[in-house]
Structures are given as C-alpha cells and as structure tokens.
Amino acid sequence: MSSKQPLPEQFRAIAPGRVNLIGDHTDYMGGLALPMAINLATTITASRGGSRIELTSEQLEGTLDLPLPASNAHLASPSWGRYVAGVAAELGSRLGFVGRVSSTLPLGSGLSSSAALEVATALALGDSGSPFEIAVRCQRAEQLASGVPCGIMDQLAITSATLGNAMLINFSDNSVTNVAIPEEAQFWVIHCGQERKLVGSAYGERRAQAEAAAALLGPLPQADMISINALADPLLRRRARHVQSECERVKEFAAALANSELDQCGRLMLQSHASLRDDYEVSTPTLNSLVMQLCTTPGVFGARVTGAGFGGCVVALADPEVELEGWRVSPSAGARVEWLS
Image (cartoon, rainbow, N blue to C red; front, side, top):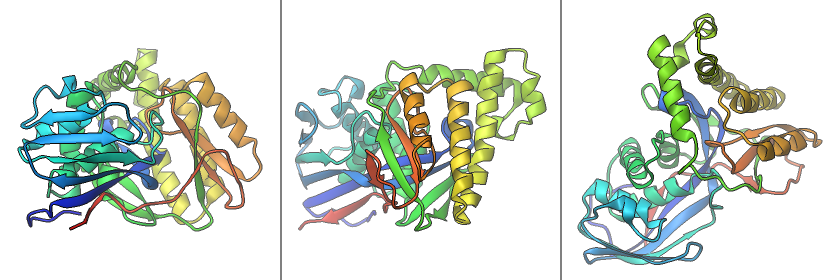
C-alpha cells in the first residue's frame, strides 16, 4: 500500500468504503467493532506535480483548486474538497497533483465515503505511513474539515482491510484481528432513503454524553451493568448501557461468524439495532421501519442500522439465495496505489 520510493508521475489511489457489521459508537469510547471493507470504492486518478491539488469529480459537484500548503481546510470549496484539504494540511504537502475523483460509493449512506476520499487523498499525496498512522492522519483531517469529533473506525478499517475478512478492532489499543467471512454469509446494504449527515447532527452530543458517563464509571466497555444501572441520570445510564452491551455483542458476533452461526449473528444484529434505537437514540423511524421489513423477509437472518445513524443505510445478513433491493457487498482488500507509469 505504501512505498518510500518516489512515486511515479501517474497513479491511481483506491480506497474502499466500509460497512460496520456490528459495534457502533464504541470506537471513540475505546471499545470494540467489527467493520468490513467493501467492494465499492473511491478512486483518485491523477498525475503528480505542481504546487496545487486540482480535482474534478464524476459524481460530485464543483472543481477543487487547492493551493499548497493547504490552510483553512474547513473553508475549502466545493464542500467535498474540505476533506482533501484537511488531509493535505495534516501532511503538510507541497507537491500536488491534477486528476479526477470517482466513486461507486453512495453518498450520505454511512458507508464512509468521506473517509475513503481522505485515505485516497493521503495515498495520492504519497503518505508512506503504516495503516494505523495513515488512519490517524485522516481521522484528524476529517475532524478539521467537518468539525465532527469522529472516531477512527472508518479510516482504520479502510487502511487495514484484507481480502475475504472482516476486522475485529479493539480501540483500546487499535489492534486488528481478521475474522473470515463464511461463504454462506451474504451481506447486503440497503439505503433507507434518508440521507445521513453527521455535520449538524447530534453525533457530538452523543459522544459528550457517553464521555460524561465514563467520567463517572471509568471506561464504559469494561463497566459492569450493576454500576451502569446505578447511575442517577437516566440519559447517561442509557448511553453507558449501549456502549457496554454493544462491545459484548461484538465479541459474541465475531465468535458466531467464525463458526458460521448465522442465526445467532442475526439475533445479535437485531439486539444491536434496538440498543442504537432506544439507548443511544441514533436511529430514525425510517431506519426502524426498514429493519422491521427486512427481518420479516424469508432468508434474512438479521438487520441493523450501520454507521453513526441519523439516516443512511441498514446492513442485513441473508442467505446467499436471497435477493434484496440494495447493494450486495463482499469483503474487499484495503486501500492501495496502482502505478500507471
């Protein structure tokens, strides 16, 4: 994925999206998650040189013309260019490129289209760090560009993925353990029709509430339920209960997936959705309706909102013969650069 040699002039930087199978709003609390990079990606095809980043897009409106070194990333125009500018600012880049960005990732879906753009930009600018180092820089770039205090799950999943596997990520130490996806497990991503936007959402409020609970209890993934239920504030109690119980579900899901126990995986997905709906309050009526519809579909083991919530997509686990209205996704390799000359 990276090289310390000078990059060829022409290249293609490819960064997949990701779907989180289970474990949401746990990464920034030092918990567990099980994401999977998918066969939908953002690609930057460009020629290296000059002191600017010039990008057009096949799917996004506007053209980015960014002088280097980048400053005021949050003011870059068009709005998608803020993520590119954030990465350039984090890297202190002075050598730019001219090219185009294309994507098969649906925007506003919760499949990490912004993180994929960030990672593709980092590789296009020659970032030669480890998967974790690149992920950290791209996480900081997103926070700079959007003002949203996002965790590192999206970027780390995109940089660390290996073909055929999901990733059990422990965010207490950012360790990654591969979990093979059984052949008989088919995952679908279905958009609920409600665009997800973290900017302006209650994401930051939810994080602050979980952190307030952790200030009283210590790290929430390790908190015991007796202490959580003893919290006087019912709102903080619900936030803490979600984080602790979700981490337990991640561990159980990883074990069940490794043993091809798809019925159990489906039950855990439904429990996760209920927790995100009731305890963390990041689902919506539209998402809830879609999950209920999917769970009454023959051959579907389970479904849940995926990503931060507030709109976007549902992930469903189904029998391979089932056809749903959405994207049939398979585990992809991580971000990479292909040399064109």
